[in-house]
Length: 301
Image 1 (cartoon, helix red, strand yellow):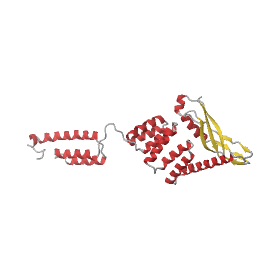
Image 2 (cartoon, one colour):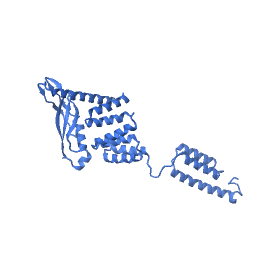
Image 3 (cartoon, helix red, strand yellow):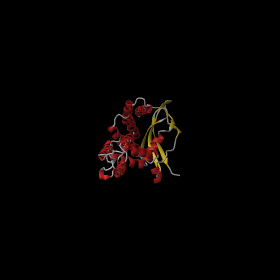
Image 4 (tube, helix red, strand yellow):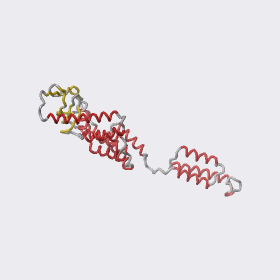
């Protein structure tokens, strides 16, 4: 029986049609507020509704609503898309707010623990905040979840390098280079660590004696290290003492903290000292690598 025929249901087909129209609109709004559907599916459903606008049966419309429900699973109230959460955390990281980045990444990982990019980003934030140990733990977690991503190995290698685990860093750079042979930066890092290890071996050989006419390295470029926002806020001041290796070309091959001041400032001291340039030390007129102590001062003016 068609519901729009005179003498139909309740004796008034037009009234029933109006009631169904209002019911349909209400359920569409309700379903639309609870479920996310692609534009393609929405258009298909709306097209079917338009085609059956004048002769729609209750059972037909119920089938349409069920189809809408089954096509896309419901979104839990308050649940946020992990990718959107990550994009927001990345934006926070680029703004330089490391602590807030840490918080946002941890909230994301609490709900999505296998989100590898979030582990890497959390590692970056921790590293900037001066916590190398925890940052390396995050990089290792990302590698365990996806060992075929070269950038995770590069990140871990860089942290190991800063922590003066040269052989560990060399191993990670080697893996990264094997995964992505076209990455020139990784190749340069690998070569730099190799030169550093060679320099350490040469310095060790000099300790046995036989080196004459040794001249000290002379600084030709020194840059002051920047403050971290946390250290500036805490008004931290003082000195950081480092042991550095200066290569035959006058570049700083490695820097190791002997006396720290603040985790974040210690990292800034290492990063800054490694940009310094020297006139290399010489032995018997030939450039040689040497190990010297330097002091970096942090002062607020």
